[in-house]
Image (cartoon, rainbow, N blue to C red; front, side, top):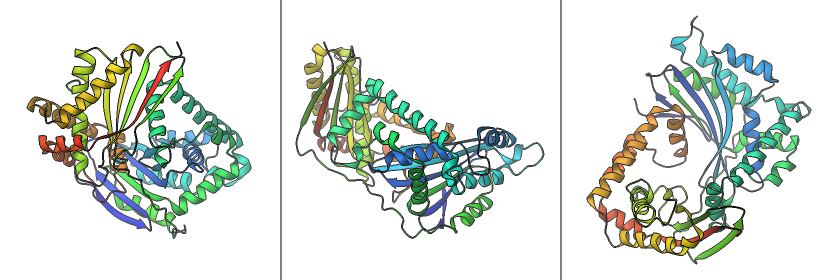
Length: 423
């Protein structure tokens, strides 16, 4: 595995190449970074979905999928991600490495051509030609939002984020809202496409054994035709400590209460303190050896599950748990007690080693999947320093107990959200 190699394509567009020769497939991703805004979130989400299903040259399901089939079953899809207060529209192609083509076909070159057709000459250039496609994708994203609502573990996590970050862009769902999705028109999609091509920061990533020069030149030619003079400024607002403690209770038709506690951490990318905060979160509630799991869940049996997750892009830490209604107060108290224990320096060598071992296992497994590896680098794209999984693990393994204690002492409780049964 070689290091990531990057080079500019044009203003606001960069190309990254990771040579990976031990698989029979390759991957090209086009990731478009935009400020996450309420007015555009749903439109951009629909745009990403539409880009992955057709283009003007192959406008229907049959012709588009025949083209993919002819390229040895190439996979091409569009999706949307969220990183801090940034929305990422992702267009991905995975295909057979050129070495394994039966007749020496240049599959990687054909993949670039098809990606460019999809991105630069989409079907919706003719606004009247894709009403049914638009209806289907809107309905699918609406169903995705309804699924989030029905998954109460996920819903309560996101609801706590919304309350905690009420006046911050971080509270916006990457898919927007059902109401906004329903209102999207063909003209909206066309306008969003124009804005994305001209204003989004773009990362083109290649993973595999393909020759990067031909792929880079293909995208350079297409982007040279676009006016890229107004690139979007990408920022995530970081609030270092909680100014007040919010407590919100809601009720729904559920059997198990959900308790989510949101903390400000003071540390977010690109701060080096993120590594200590990340490891502190693992020690606190990231593994089956963590303090929350062993004490709140196992020893005291106060929760069905209890874990912590740290978002370094926003600088917040969330503790999530499923609790019997009668145990809520005890669970809150014990969770806060475990945090105080770390703040007071009560972290054993065994806990440190278990947490670091877990981090190593998790991050080294990123190399087992092109999708995970690509996402790993994509999420770091706008940072000043980009780490490989190996470098990330090395940083974490060098963290001391004192640094973990310092990270814990930076925590301030912002929001406690409880989702209760109706009865």
